[in-house]
Length: 139
Length: 98
Image (cartoon, rainbow over all chains, first blue to last red; front, side):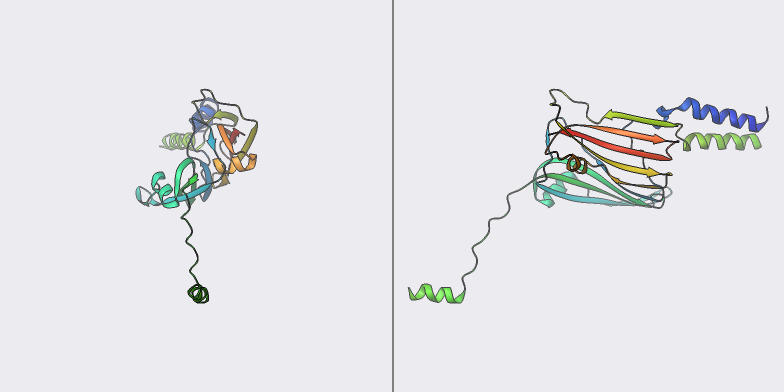
């Protein structure tokens, strides 16, 4: 058997035997773009009914620079911290936005947190004008 | 030497090619469905990937809920369509609720 026949046989086995199971679990992220990726996917799954009406949202991200085996990664994607910064008191759900370029040399993962915003600060009464102050004194 | 190279090439192909000529499956994104109410509404949002090079789209819960006009979400599924070893992939988040 020459090498071409051997290659053809092996390739056929790869294609026919591995099947779709070789893709791994259905939930694995399977649509990366080598040149460009900009996608949003669910980050959380839910046990109870979730209120998805938009009351408030906040986001935070981590950045990553990777060249071969060397990676630099920084910043904060903690859901609690993002919610606190965005003024969200009750978290409902979260999505994950991924943006990457050129073989994932540059990647940015952004967590979007959705929930109920806290009470807005109470409005202070507008400052009285000089004319109003004079009128009050005259009374 | 040549057959060794051929073997390596085949091995590389085995890793690079997913081996999946065509798939179109829907699977649950939640597993704890105890006493889950089946909602009346459904929303979908998708991401796409072409030629393993470019990937785009918003398949987040927020987008799917907005597309379906949902205010309460009860459960979620994911649909994966894969054609020609990942040459074209479409992932759809499906949310159910009211």
